[in-house]
Length: 128
Image (cartoon, rainbow, N blue to C red; front, side, top):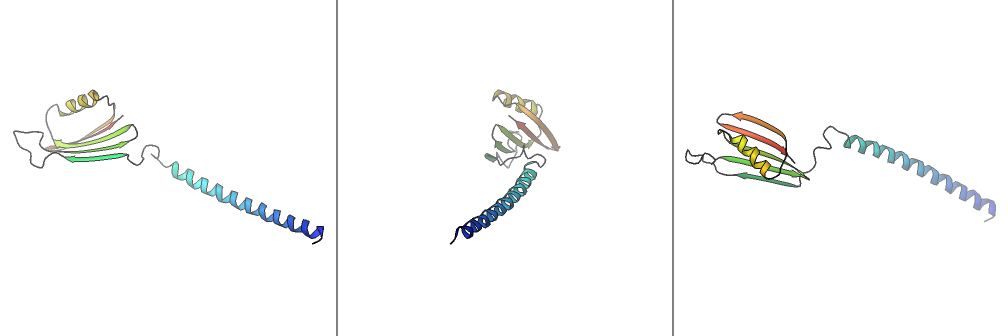
């Protein structure tokens, strides 16, 4: 090893490293673009994996003595938001009582959807 061959080898090694850095930068830019495209899909900020989910069936057999005997309840929580779905027999002032109950629990109703399928009704609440 004379000095010229050592310097020549070092230069070649630096050139290889520069090419490697450039190719890694291109890969990083492409993966950042892919990640950005995935994170900017519609509603991506609104839908996250639920932290907690609960489903309950109060009873299968409604009776005239107990008008609340049939109810399917599903609760999904994500951070500070809760989505509630309640399927039950339709009764007068039922929605008013549920909203008042949610407010008494210090929950704010952000969105409400009511779907009727006689004799049933499906209430969907988005709360915070």
